[in-house]
Image 1 (cartoon, rainbow, N blue to C red):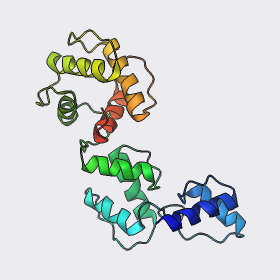
Image 2 (tube, rainbow, N blue to C red; image 1 turned 135 degrees about the vertical axis):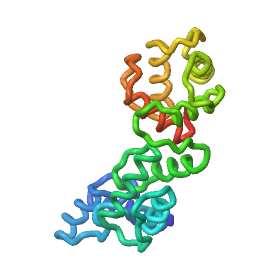
Image 3 (cartoon, rainbow, N blue to C red; image 1 turned 180 degrees about the vertical axis):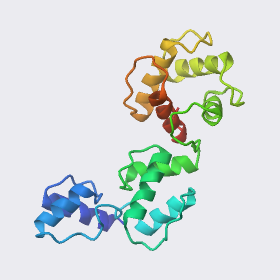
Image 4 (cartoon, one colour; image 1 turned 90 degrees about the vertical axis):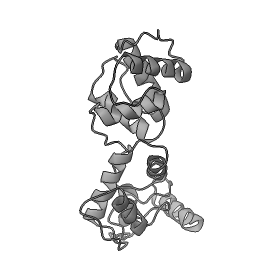
Amino acid sequence: GPKTDAGVRWLQQKVGVTADGLWGPDTEAAYRTATGGTGGGSGGGGMTSVRSVAAQQRAVNGLGYSPALEADGIWGPKTDAGVRWLQQKVGVTADGLWGPDTEAAYHAYLGEGARLDVDGVFGPATVAATQRAVGATADGQWGPASVRALQQHLNNWGSAGLTVDGDMGPATVSALQRHLNKMTKAGLGVDGVWGPATVRALQKALNLGKL
């Protein structure tokens, strides 16, 4: 709760790391140095002010992780791997630390998110999710009608100034890349190239409900 969050931030400030309330590898290392090598008990991850270890384990299991984790509240390599798997699935940095970004992405994924695998493949599931997001018929088939809907969407929400012609050319791809960078801080190069990196960024945005 708030008191523990404040306490962790106080400790972080005391040992000289960023006071963000998240007990990650940097905090663990600084704490060990300050205490002469005694660990904080988290193994470099797991314990945050956002969600307990047991709650993280239950969340990972709830998204279908296999083999399922034992929800025992103990942080270890299996739980670390499970949390990283969940983070990749919901479209945030897979660092094993369940902070505010992971929490928000997890709830978005369960709510209005598309629940896509972030694999860089523009297959029927990703196509249908994109079509739903831009208001096209969600049939999983990407064609000129879907491209026109995307172009109109980018014009409406990204002021892209595209000609709505159904051509998925470099101008449309570049506009999509700029939009993804703005909406999700995707960090894409705006090069107009339709490839796996852009598709992964698109999938993450769809999972977050931010296209």
